[in-house]
Length: 541
Image (cartoon, rainbow, N blue to C red; front, side, top):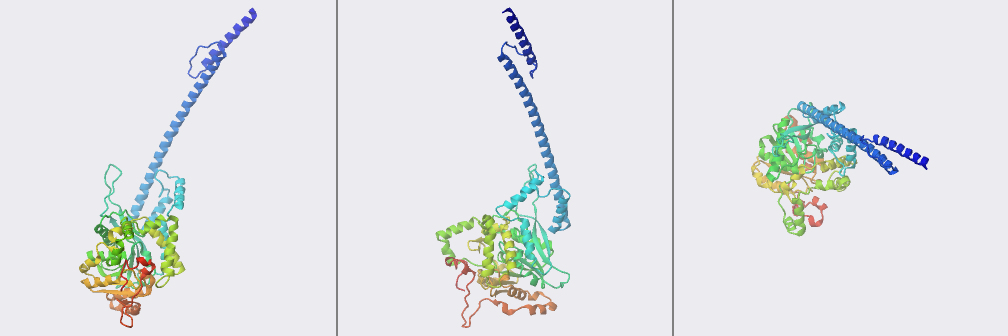
């Protein structure tokens, strides 16, 4: 028993020594009192493990802090590099615009900047290639399949149908006088308004004679200069020809629409056209506008008659007066709702955008019906229809801007809120109205305007043509334009022009049947439901 007690006492001493050693191995370097039990040893071992975990956690936190600091530093340096790249691109593009107003040149310079390693068109906070791939994927998955580049490509393909060479450029017209100066993000100051540009094509060659008059073509609502693609080749032979996209449409600048009233809207379009004339260096011009473009051309001629040699209004909007049937329709519940939708400024373009990827199909069905199946005149060929449909869709679906003028300029039924007929007595410019025989715009508004004007006026109507008379019957339209502009060629050229005019291609005012009675023509409203016919113009001619 004594031997066993001694052995036990020695074992206890050994255990105490072992516990002291384990206590010394703790991470915090402190010793705890050891008890003569296995539970004490387990506690000591747990304490040691806990200390190791604390040390490991502290190390991991330091690593995370270091990684976070490094990430912030990298993000900051990336942001600085991106800002510097953007500034470099802006400087290069600005220099290109100073050298020439041609945006093609600016694009070449920007492409050179990209080749040199500057990130153009990327997110300033992420200049990685993955962001570019993400942006490309976003465009592919976008609900509305259009972009500025798509519209550029569509216009270029459509104009390849032309045989006459032309020059394309973006004409700088300066900042918007109506829009407020944009507020700078730095120090609460204000930055100068952004300069605007108008997309323009010009047909001027060295072979042209010096005595040719200048003709400027202005498109209608929701359209672009490409709508005249069937007319450029013929007109370019007899005029110094220019065509432009109005501000907010086509490939022209599409700023935020700043206007709140009818007067502001008229000034916005009118003065942008005047700034374009100044930039182009044109003193006098024959101004030709279609539909809404005719409205803009008319108010321009009222303000700047000294620069308008002759005014040609093709199916112009704003000269008609509301019909009795339209007033009756507006008194109904349906008419009141339609008028409310109009006042909400829900434009045809916004409807096409809301259709998303079904939008191109809807536009294609419209062009097939309007310009092929039920064309009043010469149908579009298969190639023309395909290219024109593509151009029309991208023009409509692009960023909204000029289209928002609709409710400011017109009331329901496309009647001017400030009728142009009431201002006709102030117009001091020779004017020719051209209507398609089936035009849904009432030609009698043009006749009343001619009677009220100070200068001579004439109304020409072209058979086998509707509102888009220059597409439906291009040959008849060309004869009518040449007829209107005969006084502006010199004697040497006048003989050749006279030979090109087919007097049978158009008629003046009413058409009369053999019995001396007016020949009634069913216009484009035949495509509308029966209940809607007569809302725009009276059925009696």
